[in-house]
Amino acid sequence: MRYATGIGLLLLLFSIGAMPTPAQQSASHQRPPIIDMHIHAAPFDRFGNPPPPNPVTGKVPRYRTNKTLMDATLREMKRYNIVKAVASGPLDEVQRWKNAAPNIIIGGLHTSFDYTLPDVATVRKEFLVGRFAVLGELGLQYVGMSFDDPRMEPYYALAEELDIPVALHTGTGPSARVPEDWRPLGNPASLKKVLIRDPKLRVYL
Image 1 (cartoon, rainbow, N blue to C red):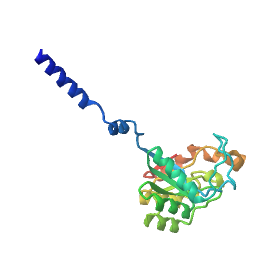
Image 2 (tube, rainbow, N blue to C red; image 1 turned 30 degrees about the vertical axis):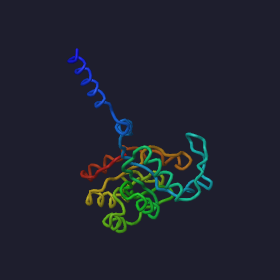
Image 3 (tube, one colour; image 1 turned 60 degrees about the horizontal axis):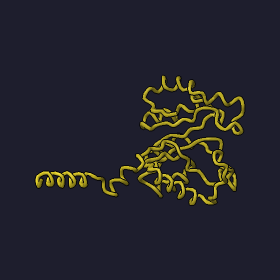
Image 4 (cartoon, rainbow, N blue to C red; image 1 turned 180 degrees about the vertical axis):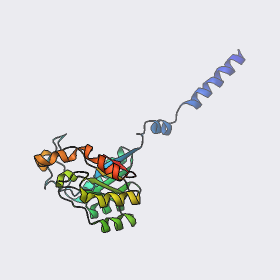
């Protein structure tokens, strides 16, 4: 009987020792790490002041400065365990985000209807000094260009030379901002010529 009791006590101690501690339980419920390849480091009033309602929730964002928008975004990234994020936007805003979260934010050089690409020499300098690590997001159809537009070849050649990933916005985009005859320019099929010409180019869509 004593032997059986001893075995029972031993099993009980093993079972207690195997139970996860509160810290282990918390860790087991932690969200897995996420790498976000596409966020915008844009001014809070890019689409108007006050900003328009969120198209999903219908709520008007309450942030009224670039800093409060950035801080709120970084808090949400921490909440969802986003450990790295490519942030594209105006040069000064991207740098602000990188300064605020240097271990998380990866700079992306953005172009769209309201941001234009600097000349190739400037882009080279920006990448060599480490301000950016991604060429993109490139919303070329917003400015009437297809992916294989000859004007883009010097940028693709630079990206291939420096082994810089290129992020391309595909599809039509918001219809109000893209004229009808520009919408086909976002077709990924036009990238075929680029990939044949620049076979070492790293691209994500």
